[in-house]
Image (cartoon, rainbow, N blue to C red; front, top):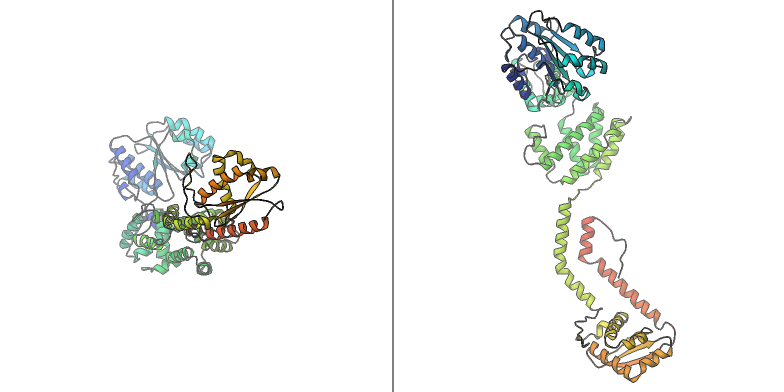
Length: 546
């Protein structure tokens, strides 16, 4: 007799033996107990999670000699025939190979006959989404109002391909992927029964390759048992399955997070020389960084990460000193490169280019961290800003108050104004505009050229009328009064005529240039500017003095 693989030998025969689908089996058991079984059931979900097995168990439950019962006996003639696949009243149809309208017409012609032995005539159609559109249309009326002795059980991995008119006539049950721990526990019991020695880590490696499919896990266990005999080590599990060692993934991700390009490329080269499919390496790296991102966002064991406890602790340790933004950036770039790597004729070169790009990213700061740094800069500004204003006050006069009467109160300001004649002149003009507006038109052709200990020199350009107007005795007295109050000492006023159109222009321009340069140097060395450059990793493009 030919060898019976584990996936067939240990196929569930009762609802209790189905692993990881309690939400489905409990519903079906309650429906049988209360006599509320729908005439058409649709089982949808990933491959290898028990859809067809549950359909067979339902067939046995409905036609068992003790039934209908949620616990078929598996010893009566009807149960045995269904288990062996030779029951006359249970028809298993492959939707992929019997997908045309002719097959559905034959089915419609046969359902009107009563079952030969059991209570119900049952049709199990696997991969029902493969039926053609005309076949589905032919099935509509029969599916909606079948004879009372007919039950339909459909199984599919792609329920979205089934027409909505069919879905609306079925009671749908969604199957889940079996969790890693559930598969490991089941395989542990199975290995004990078979006297096969394998570590729990070896079973986890095997289960991870199964991707949540119990059938795939049993098939891989069959392969490992054939490779090793009665006992197998973790290294032999990796060799027999061609799987990637989890340690290699952790080392590779650590190199990328640390920006170690040579280490990342060496590890990739080792995996390539070992014969691993680099596209599969990429997919597992993408999944690993997805787990790292979820672990970084959550606290404790996160339900979104299907990984054993020791790997969860390793992931937490790996991202402990790395910002969430850095992990997210690497994951996003890995995800964006999926199409290019999957379709690349040179996946090794594509991965190397991607790893070089990823390793060049430095640790990314979060927006909250940037705001905190700016807050610290702002607090430091309170301490450093006062001296900065004091430096500026050396060049800028401090006009404390100007009352309605025009009285001005000042301290000793002689050193302040000797370096900035233009700014001092503008302040004097504002006072003249309030005190004696008749002199303002004449002042428009004048400029302040010198300020001494006890004198002030004003140079007038243009029309001699303005010069004569300002040299008037009454005007001199008014100007002297304002300037004496402004400088807080008696000032002699000298009104001079300009000898050229732009007197002392070059000298003033040089002084202005020196002042501008000094202000730029002070601005660049200010703590606010230096801290902002450090936070944003920027550079100064230009400094404008307003």
